[in-house]
Length: 522
Image (cartoon, rainbow, N blue to C red; front, side, top):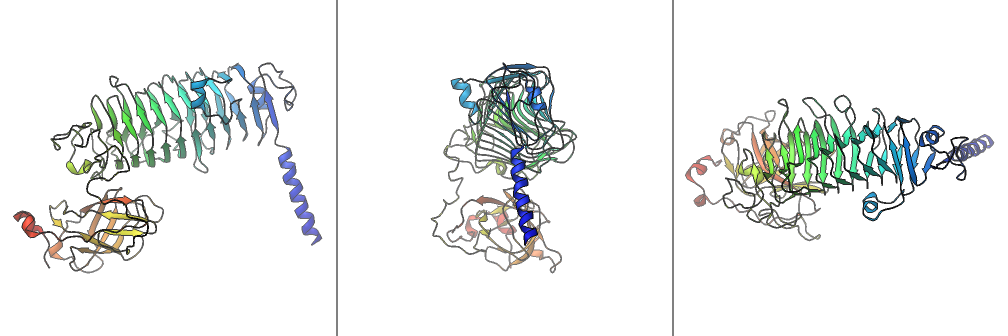
């Protein structure tokens, strides 16, 4: 017991000592580069000297004033660098004006450590990166800073062990390349990045650039949310990026300039664009493929598209798993997008070889959370349902809603409402840890109340459910031959309980003779 007590006492003492060794270091333009700079009345004069005097856990305080150093300034310890406006949203300071620590380091800060933070600074007129994070590190926090007139304000790298957060900054008058760009992105993938609540204004040519190279997605788990991106030739560029989301952002460009809100170049797999507002420039969202590398699992849903010189959504090459990828958007008018397949549409245009199933249904009002097409509204919380209710498959607090319309397949066959009951596990919404998109689940599927069939189902993106015959469990039924590629329209619902009205069976009198011949018989 005595040894244990001594051990605990030593451990507490050690922790106290560790905290005691976390020092505050002070820098002022009127200071002197001597000593350890740990006395606020005896600060360093240069930022490089103050950072050189720091150790893991220290905080370097930079007083208001102007600092011009050649750099680069290497940061080799896990430290915090705070300015006089630490904790004050940079977007607010741009409007009102504050006393700043204005830093001009020709070759910028180079971060060679984990969990380094920058807060409340103004970084201007660098020659390359204002802040460059070297590959192999993680967990940086860059918040409440103003960036002005830099070729690249941030060169990002993050190995994913902990999130890299870029929040509440203002990126102004960027030049040459991008306000935010992946550092050495062709060779080093980046993951677990959050870019939120920032202002990007007049950045030429790119505000946020997640580019890499190759046939498959390498960058992953990128969240870009609640940013305001103004007057940038390219708001966001994605290439070789997967499992990422862009949500709640506003993209604003003058209508006369050549600009794209989000450019999805190629080799991207699993990018969700939702709840954003696009206006001005050439396109809101544009998709193509580079060097033959296609995009897949791209979802552009529940966004608002305003006026563009070309179109709200354009595509030179459609994404794989395309059905419904641009559905449930507000196109600026209840008539939907302007496109030959929608002759009454007067909203923002579609440009490319679209099919009707790519973009219908659409929102009839500007409420991005409103009813899309003929879907029922969310029920009250006291509603009840069963896991295999007709038209619904649910697991936990998520569910899929299967279209109640006649469902066309690649073999031009049509079927009535369907019921799905999993036989070997959970069929979840797209991208959840328990059942990611593309993983097969065995299921019993009932078509229009007929005898259940044992088949394979898997999600492909948010809006496609692929159904194949399950060969290992009996012979194929010749009356229901799907050419191994049957697709159903699905959507996610965000409420925990859902009840559908009884699904009517198809009325043979309302089905064409060709369709009637294709309906399964038992």
